Amino acid sequence: MASSRRSLLLLVLAAIAATATAAVGDAPFVVAHKKVALSRPGPGVERLAVTLNLYNQGAAF
Image (cartoon, rainbow, N blue to C red; front, side, top):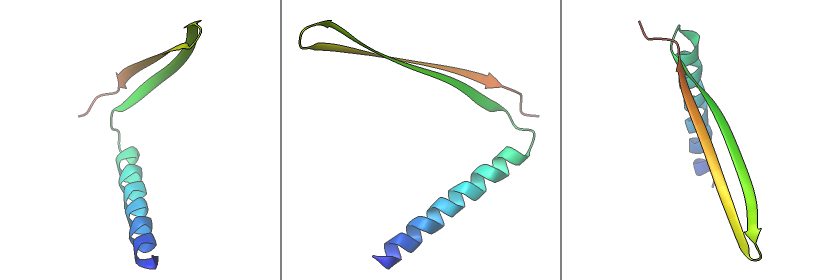
């Protein structure tokens, strides 16, 4: 149990370090707008609509 927690912690720390390293440079990034709408058109019916807009900002040189 302690071994799996330690390996999970190391994995999370490695992911954080990799993300921080990528964020330091003048790298492109993505702006995401998320929207979720739930509607109930009739009894016993639910409709879920998910909208995801991705915008690439910046350029890689």
